Length: 99
Image (tube, rainbow, N blue to C red; front, side, top):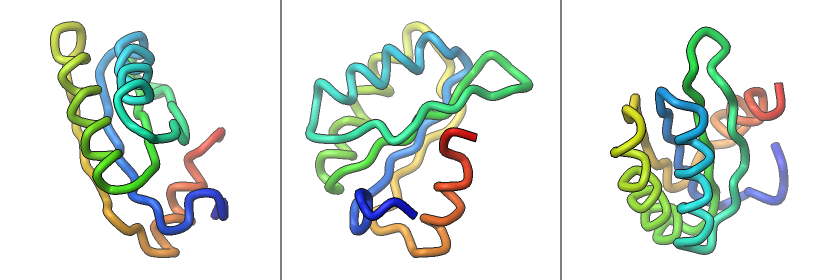
């Protein structure tokens, strides 16, 4: 687990369009004080999953803005926010980054 993200909330959203993921991630980063932890392309489809980190209010604001920006150009497959991921969850998240 990266010490950089300890104690931070995580927002995760999946879209059915990789290009839309970049648009949404850009909007998220410009909306609130968050960091983009990763964008992973779905190898079986054209979509991707975006992980953003920061304080819970920043992640919430960034997620709302990102999903709003994505809706006209992509299908939102799923999304969630975890306010305080456990160590086990952090380890699982780390396994998916830059795989």
